[in-house]
Image (cartoon, rainbow, N blue to C red):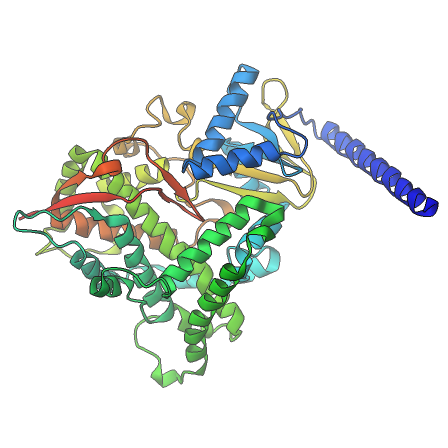
Length: 512
């Protein structure tokens, strides 16, 4: 018994000595690199208070506001606007920043000093596998090289494919004798539209969720779209709990992962066994990457990674677009006039092209302003792979470098950065697309990330969203928000992307 006690005491002493040595080394590094001290957010040693805070904001459907409120609290405590500080959560010190210089350092200038790390993989791997959004290092470089050629202008400008799915969406919005639709949750329609078009682009065959809903009046909870949605919910919960992510895993989550994988495996197996002469003449993403890799697990993982981005990003953006238009009907009228002038009417449209959508300034201003206010990924994090620094945020006035330890997380809030009054003006919280008429943003605007890991599907998402909005505005000349869509606090639902937390319920009037 005495021997056990002695060994435990020695181990404890060695641990304390090792901890003190590391602290001394970090302090030496910080002095050598001229780093200032970083402010600390109030909390307990274990950081359970910050986890409870995050879970409460998530439950109240306002999670992106948490970083903003923490920054406001720190600014009040320090009597100056504080854009970078440290908080503790579940025993880990995390640096939070909304400073463009720091974000640029993490994503670009010091790209090799940071990685996604285990938190991202722990949250997503069981559902998505090892793909471009979960990988680091050489495998990420290989993945990006594999996928980037698939997002050339020729591939993302197939608007005929998009039109077929837009027409299915339009059938879900019939009008009565007065020309008005019934109150319609258009967000659900958008999520069906984008998974239908994404699966046809990726697999060569659409899941046809919109058609199924039109036939039955609802979506089967066992179908792929519903399973994929539920799988993302579990992934988001794992991300919330970080190092104890495993407490979220249960029988349902494992079954969902198996079902999602089995569905995609069916297409992968067919692609790998398909004769060259039997391949369809039109472009199919899976067939293209199967010419580069024959690994079925890698193919499945990359498909699921791209499906997540291609489906949710665009559907969320479209939902925010309509919500903002419902709250600003005068701007709806203004934007519709510009769309009709540029692209013609719904019944007799002019040719809508990738180039035409991109050059339509009123449309692009509207999309940019929507993404500024409601960035689809409102915050992100990176893990330091070595002892390094951030360029600013330390010292009494916050202008000195900040020391970042190896293994430490840096969380950056694009939601807060996009709404900073010192960067965007006193109307930063207001919807004003006209601000983009003369603005060319830098690192203060990051709707699709930046640096080497900038979203390869950025133009794909903007093209699809732009096309759908053009067709919607061509058909309908008036919009009315219903219930929470029209007024009140806007709920924000955060799974892996940011979407409206309530249904986006509108009535639309069909134009002549």
